[in-house]
Length: 81
Image 1 (tube, rainbow, N blue to C red):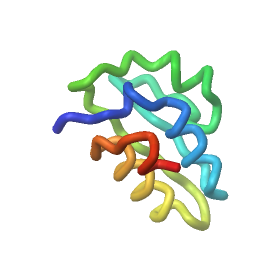
Image 2 (image 1 turned 90 degrees about the vertical axis):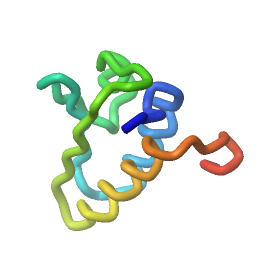
Image 3 (image 1 turned 90 degrees about the horizontal axis):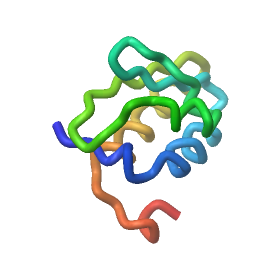
């Protein structure tokens, strides 16, 4: 599946910070905190990269669904904000 994560790391950070749950993104075995922009930018993410979203906390399901929706749909910036 094509992902659009590479187009909006800042939006991923802001979306992850809306939740109490811890949120991580994993690419090729490398797991980084989605609430830290520098960590997100370290990940080798391109258009066809397979990513894993890992969440843990009271609203983990909602957090995972929101991040998944953001990276699998080609929203314009106006749609995100």
